Length: 400
Ligand code: FAD
Ligand code: UDP
Image 1: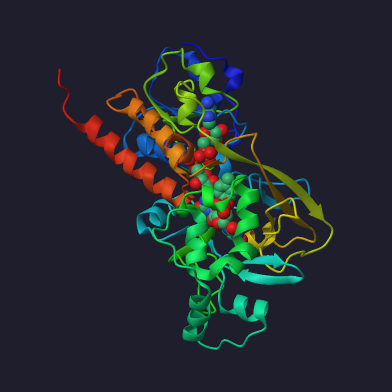
Image 2: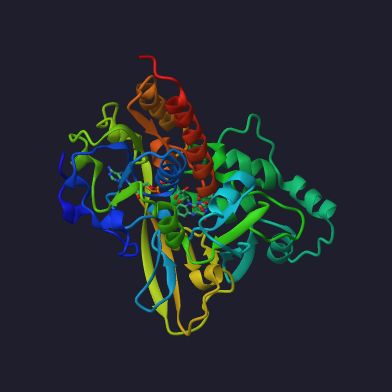
């Protein structure tokens, strides 16, 4: 099957022969078609090609690789994340070791402040937050724990995102830090969301103001896109950007498809659409070296339309006379960024998942492919595990 050669677009070094050669020029098909060049797709393509010796065609409907983690230099020459701030953190040594083959790292520990009135307070809530907000002098963990215990409203069982917070810090702190932010971010009240959503943000009684506590926290030294380029730069991998799966699926290019787009889309929405939350990003460059005290400021107030603002130079360490920032506005319509964790959505996903059972021709991976609110490291871990399963399958002796 021939596919128009002009579709083979590349953001990579032009000398790469596999990108210059139109793959449709020969009659060969591929062993695997990987749909999506984000973390899920790139890891699987890399493993299948470099470890499995398979010929892999990767397509992505976007004009770039990296999926949501894509970064690039903006007009001012500042490295920015097109789809909002991406901070790498993991407790998995396997995941960190695997990605370290493709990038060196810049150590970075993420800190976030919440804008509450005129104050900038650490989030996750810690002892500094409590002392500043209530003009207290809690000097020990025990004192802070007592303060919170006096306000906590036990909920049993803890089911929703409201329950999680109320049961730890009580209604007032819940309203200040979580209620408005969550309503804006998800278009739902926290009481309508699974507990796993706000449980991502812990409560602390010490002074630790890091957003994540993972053992490994760092940014790819040359950016995410450069890391993805190195993953996909293999003679067995051909990348087609600006190419929707819909344009390829009638063509018998590969016996097996790895699908990392939305699972409901793959099955033509036969049970209805899975709900996703989208975002709109407003990028700005300012003629000053630094605008924000930390990389991200959260805005929990419902009087402010956006949820958070990010200044990238904190993440990247780039030295530049200007600075670039991004405002995030949550939206119902638009590209799917977040699966929405709540029981009815999970039930609908399970209906789609059941359609995948016993399918030898397609495998679903990633945040959209498995409808899971996964961080990057979880997607990498999931993709590596998926590769091991595929490997066992193609290593097994043929039944014929
Ligand atoms: P994606 O990156 O979405 O890749 C899927 C790819 O498939 C996309 O490129 C898409 O264009 C392509 N595709 C879909 N359908 C088709 C089709 N029909 N045909 C062709 N191509 C198709 N994680 C962290 O660990 N730390 C963070 O700080 C962090 N911050 C985040 C901030 C935001 C605003 C968002 C939205 C997510 C953040 N994440 C973060 C999560 C992270 O983005 C994801 O875990 C990860 O990028 C998911 O990778 P993926 O490959 O599953 O999906
Ligand atoms: N959240 C909140 N206030 C905050 C930070 C987070 O209410 O200041 C809630 C909100 O519902 C958010 C969820 O906790 O969607 C998870 O936060 P996280 O920062 O992990 O979100 P992500 O980076 O995935 O957008």
